[in-house]
Amino acid sequence: KQLKSILSNKRRQRTSAQEAEEYLFQTLTEGTVRPDVVAFTKVISAWARSRRPDAQDRAEALLSRMIDIANDEGREDVRPNTFTYNALINAFARRGLVAKAEEYLSKMQEVSTNVDADCITYNSVINAYASSRKAKKEGGQRALELFEEMKSDESIKPDSVTYGSVIKCLTNAGGKANAEKAEELLDELEELYETSGGADESLAPNTIIYNSVLNAWSTVRGGIGRAEAILDRMEELHGAGNDDVSPDAFTFSSLIKAWTAAASSGKGRRKAAGSGGGVDDTDDDTDLLGRSAAERAQQLLDRMEQLYRNGDDDVKPNKVVYNSVIHAWARSGEAGSAQRAEDLLARMQQQAKVGDGDDDVKPDVVTFNSVIDAWARAEEYGSAEKAENLLSSMEKQYIAGDESVKPDIKSINSCINAWSRTGGPGAGLRAEQLLDRAESLYEETGDDDVRPNKVTYSSVINAHAKSYKKGCGEFAEAILDHMEEMYEDGASEARPNPIAFSAVLQAWQNSDVGLSAPRAEGLLMRMMEYLDEGKRGGKDVIDANKTFDLVVRLLDKTYDEDTIERIEELREGIRME
Picture 1 (cartoon, rainbow, N blue to C red):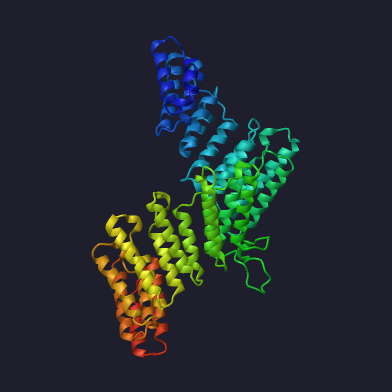
Picture 2 (cartoon, rainbow, N blue to C red):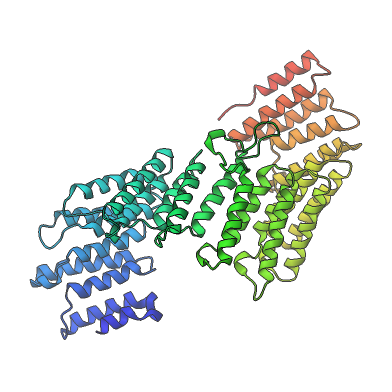
């Protein structure tokens, strides 16, 4: 009774396993109560649920103690049984410790009496693979092997937990073949349940299993259509009265994430007028509704909001979902996408103000950065000013005490990028002013979150190049000189890269003086010094080759055979690692 009281006290859940074990050992020492296998197993189960980092070791030590007592004292009532081993394997499974889970499955199979691996045993071992980050790749195959072992044993009947765990392992492993197998297992489970006439609840597919299959397809290239089909199945089943299956927040957010990825990769954008409508169906990521990826993500969010308003709390969208849709609009490349992103920001702000305020949808720095990025990519008249207005709004809210919207270097970089993409006479100056703000803020606070990096400087250089203003070449190269000075003073994040040199070369070409061959050669030689430091990677080499290509293209009109030959000889110095 005392042991039961300790383990059932919810207020002391974090310490209950420790207290229960202490009480167990106390009774052993005093000899007033003889704890049996049931008592020991309960304590092992408590350790399995514990959050302590050594919980699985404590559980394992208890099982060893049980074996010692049974052998040394002849107490068969303490000898570990199937339930005991299952409790210990569960302790390992919860922590993704696949080797230990497998070890004790083997030990169970070796024990001749009192212990038989059952469905729970196998489910726990499979779940160990599902919970393991390190065993993702091999987890799918091993889960299938364990599943086949179960099916070959007439005494063990796989249930919906088994199917769900195997499907999760396949989802974690990734890839089209695993997604195909996951859906095949779902189909098999549905058929088994239907064959039982719906009487065998242990075989009833549930939301979690459908979500795993949907997630498997949503992460596969070209699999969004299959993921959408799973959502349709779930809605059809729920509409027919199946309460075990109902799309929830995870269902919708998985699909939204997939459509956002399609928008980011350039897939799923609306086809140009006259091309037949719909979206780019490359890799079969086809939007069956004839909408762009961002529009489909938006539609799914709208559906979540509608269901939530109708009383379904399981589909309440949070800021992560909103941020994902905003990101989809930012990367969609469609006309009006930046405004759609800002409209969502306003919607989040409004919801956060209603009543007591909903912190789950309150915009944060990620939200603002995505909307700023949307305006930066819009390249519309006034888009750079709108990006800066959002940055100013973040600063005001942060000063007022809202830490969640504290601007970082990504915020500033996106604003600079907005000026870089917009171009025009004042672009370089406005971009450089933002750089000055970032440098001053970093000097004042020492906060690494606002420390300018090579992206910052390269974007300012590019803004000067796009300004086509008199002297833009000099202004751009001055920023490059500043980067070199900072790098020499120890600021590794300011190390000039080929992208910065390309922007300076383009700035000189766009300036009133133009790009001369000697200047181009000089800049290329400076760039090569950084490549020869031994710190370059594959991307630097690729970008450097692009820089050489740019120079050859820019000097094409004033073609000088000797100059081009020297440039190509210099290019030979790029050594792939």
